[in-house]
Image (cartoon, rainbow, N blue to C red):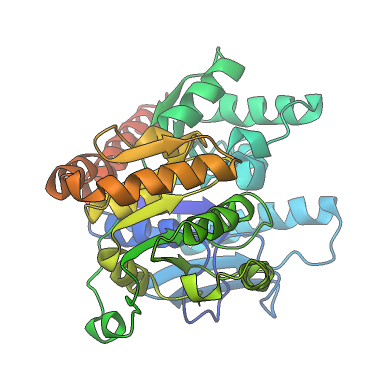
Length: 378
């Protein structure tokens, strides 16, 4: 069986550390045990050629540079690319990720080449602009032509089901692969404060991850006399902006910004934390929430939708999103109660729901069903 992932984001070709598309990479590695898998990333304007076919981190990656091209030329190129990929790889299954990115590409492939696809939706409904009629109809077309529509959280599934009641959506969580910790990196983690907690999130947006509410909450807790440190993992465009904010708030000594680091180093940091925070305004799911739970860590999460739908009352405190006082109160409550949470119980729940091998098996069943239907001419 040959599976082609068509992804809306992925790290650049020369990236030493994967920043975007880590889920796609890890899912591909897990699937390689059972099938031949490749990735097509049609929006990589960093490559020098128009199209590339390379092996990167043990994965075959097809890339398209569509820089400075008209929409018509882009669409023609996507069709040409599929013809090329069919000759070089000949996929049995097309698995698209995120309708707003690659959805129309695979929908056109189906219309012209009669190639069925399934789609996993990772994007929060709040970012889809479905109040715009054109967008609403486009997404409906993409979902309606997909052989299977999968959401990465119950919250996202319910929201899309309400918007498109005639289309069936199902839930498969993002799969998480636990990494071995780097002992040398653990030794460098500063744990000088009495209470240490972490947050993981790329600074790709100025507001979505909720740092503008979290950092003032940290300041208020410091003023109250709590000996705390927030460990912040993630790089991106607005990293320096929030570093400056922490300095202006006078909490530089209570925040450690690690920037963009390898995923196993993130796991090293999480493993040393007393608890983890997700302060997002909205999420489709929350990989960092799943990772924290797999490591047995309790959480303070905002009612951001996807992230808050992943946790249970035995693993997290849920607080109002976009609210500094709510975050402050939730963190203070967690500081006083985190030792009462059952780490093994949290870990077991996460293993049952998020561990990558069980997620892979769920996708394999879908692939086999689709392939059998294809062979029968359905």
